[in-house]
Amino acid sequence: MATSPSSANMDRSAPSTITTTEVIARPANATEDYKNHEMMILTVRIWRNWRRNFSTEAPLSGIRVLDLTRIVAGPYCTMILADLGADVIKVEKPGTGDESRLWGPPFLENSGDSVYFMAANRNKRSVCIDLKQGRSVVEDLTRKCDILVENYVPGKLKAFGLDYNSLRQINRGLIYCSITGYGGRGPYVNRPGYDVIAASMGGLIHITGAEDGAPAKVGVAMTDIATRLYAHGAILAALLSRQKTGKGQKIDVDLLSTQVSCLINVASNYLNAGLEAKRWGTAHSSIVPYQAFKTTSGYLTIGAGSDAHFKSLCDLLEIPEIAENPKFLTNKLRVRNRKELIDVLEGIFAGKSTAEWMEQLRNAPFPLAPINSIQEVFEDEHVKAIGLVKRVPHPVAGSVRVVGPPVVYSDAENSVRTAPPTLGQHTDIILQEVLGYSEETIKDLREKNIIQ
Image (cartoon, rainbow, N blue to C red; front, side, top):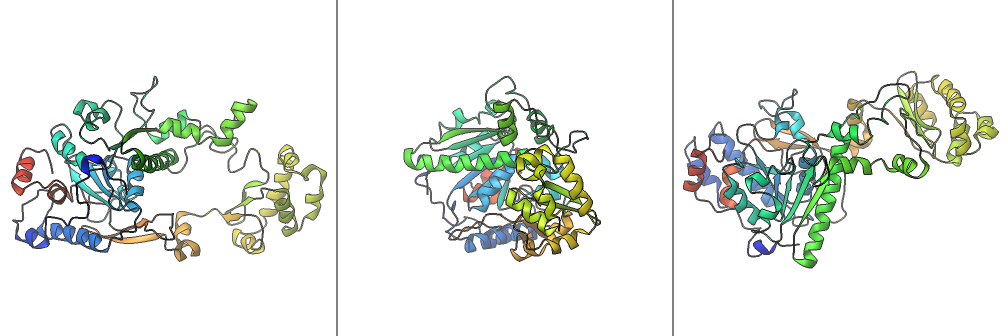
């Protein structure tokens, strides 16, 4: 485990300085954001239970992350680190918090938090700090952290004295990851960026949609998701680098560069063959047949990616003569004669239901699948069998369900342990446990509206 030089003497496994008994003894109005005493007691109990049951085999156990991100790409990145065992402290704006808390309906039962917020913030602790007035508090937290992740417009945090060059002076081992729309250089550096904007500028929307239709947005924020994956991998690499050098560093990850990198073969086609891309619907520009076909009950996607797969498909559809047709013998020929072949296959698949085709093709050597609704996704026997959906207790809603980590380790923990936090749920606990602040200091910060 890497340890930053500035925090080498810190005991990361030390028990919290706050106890359930101490919380019960406090007056009911000890913190403004807790509506009643029981909520704070429950918060401590959930956190205590997590601490007791937390496996030291989690890859990032002992690593602490200061999370200054909001919306999707940043929170998804820090959630991956949290799933892997890092102690992620989510710093939020007093009063409103992460903007995605308000991105509803739908909203969580008995809560003002959107269910959208539930998707990217599990396994974290929330502390409310006004960045304009609370610079010293953030600096104190930085001294205790290995990693800081932020996704503000470039220059915003510098105005608060919370940029990399400022914070590295107080923690030389700090790994500081900035997730932005366009990176730290270039003519667009100061522009704000959202997923759909980067997907537009980076070509994804241009190549998405029906062949004869208008450009279409992908159903989820894929550019954001890809960016958080790049960011989390870069952070892990920086941790390994720090083990060798003892030094932290700054990481810049941006939505536009990520999206352009995700053009993969489409980019290569243009850069090396001068081919402009077009929309193909569910089809593939370079592989045939590789697309969805309409059935009597829905759609079925076929991926016959090789000549052998195509022959097997024709045999299973009882049209072996199509596989032997000189027009379709190779993938190159099938791409050239795409329309003729697809017309034949569309006529065949239109004759039965998706379930009937799944049964008829159950022993196929090539991949195939129905196009599922979201309900069908979560009712799928395989999704249920692997236990991908997890239920965890929530201090307001009772419990919430989330999609757990898709990666399974043979000898390490990667798990859902706690629900996404309520706004400022852990402010007092973090300031006492991590920073050693006294109750008087916390009270003073609250009265000055620096924390919530």
